[in-house]
Length: 122
Image 1 (tube, rainbow, N blue to C red):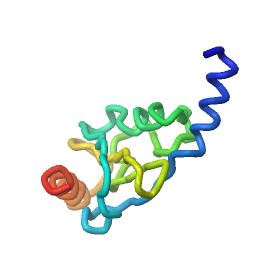
Image 2: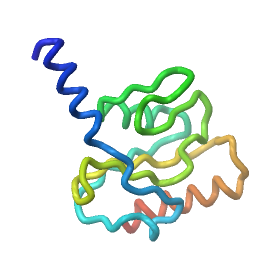
Image 3: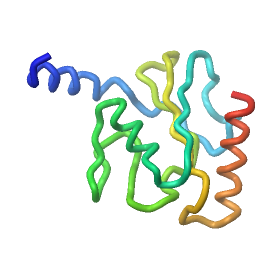
């Protein structure tokens, strides 16, 4: 498509995907009824930035204009965050990173447990 058509499609898509649930415990998330694509990886490698790019929302170097918050330091995503265009549609899941994070060790351990539980049982 032309640059104008692509820009129009991007603007239309921007309003479609929203945060539909967030929790540090898998049991408190909305029930999984459809496909979920979880973004998992080491801390500060760009999982949230990838999510923002997939849905057409950009994040700036000093502030966030996208869906998922991003910063230039590990430990910004502190919960399992579910994004979708509809309540019962396919979902993107932004997960905390594993490895170093600017957080208390006990807090990081809880994130890790939530991620393990999500991967094993969801």
